[in-house]
Image 1 (cartoon, one colour):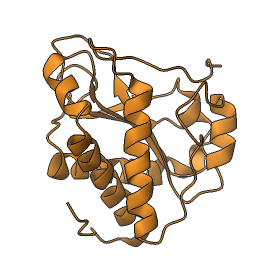
Image 2 (cartoon, one colour; image 1 turned 60 degrees about the horizontal axis):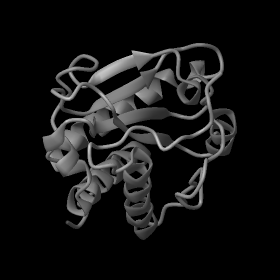
Image 3 (cartoon, rainbow, N blue to C red; image 1 turned 45 degrees about the vertical axis):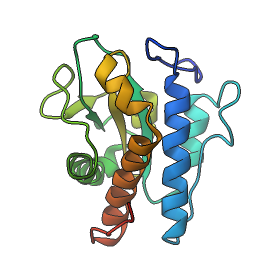
Image 4 (cartoon, rainbow, N blue to C red; image 1 turned 30 degrees about the vertical axis):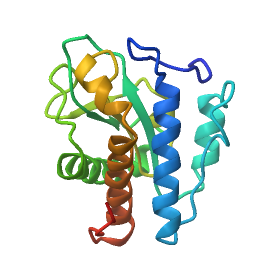
Length: 190
């Protein structure tokens, strides 16, 4: 059991994780729709509290692939991204292998297309396996969660709040999704 959505962490200047997540998701949606994909979002705007994790999982379990976009609130000295991978626990057993493959594509695209490097404080080599996140536990489609960077680190907060970097992150995620679905690395504008 987890609480329903909140605004999450924030930068020292008050820029919320939910705004970062929403902006990246909006750019990602535009990129994917531009390539002909049908996109399912678990919320229609960034106002208020979104649906709880069980409802969000149900909404996404009818898709071909899913990604949870986040930014971390780690130690102020820490920097970098981490791909969170599911651990088999019953409902998600059939998609563990495909989730691992999708996670490798997300990791590679982040390194190739964003200024954010591998986390120096969370996970190992930019990955961590989690068995305690409902979104990953309840998935029946290939899925990962990405902590795109650390909002409490001043330098990384500067990157994460930049519309240019948010677009780069969205393009990297779109490239990973397209590769997962088609087997090819797309050349996205930007």
